[in-house]
Length: 163
Image 1 (cartoon, rainbow, N blue to C red):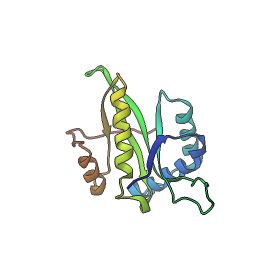
Image 2: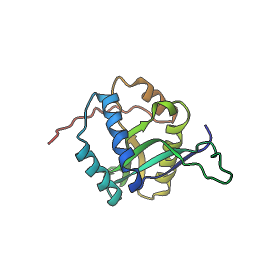
Image 3: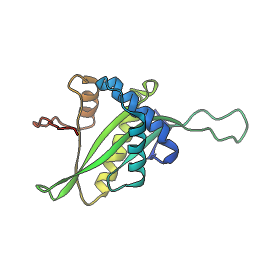
């Protein structure tokens, strides 16, 4: 798929990021997220890059009918990166989270382009020691995609306590 541009998200993407996160939560976990809390969380990351950042993937549309008119790019997907310090490695793992690709853009290289951009950015960061992500146990399609990107399943299980 040509014409995919991956770039940092900006404030003009807030509504799309909220919608993408809501759709991803319903699709992957059957969860309905509070849109007000989610919007505050997205705004936080856009203003506090030390906590993480969003990337968006845009698909260029066909040129407009007016000669010289620039087409508006169409948001095809997004993901979030957060950081975890590893004392064992004296570095930061970059956690890929909140991955969403609109259904009509799936299996067309959108996630691959976003993942490669994250990989490139992490390799340029002298503190990065690797990439990590978690995936729902039943999401075999996502697992196959991550494996195709060179990621391997770890022996860890994830536990949590929510507040």
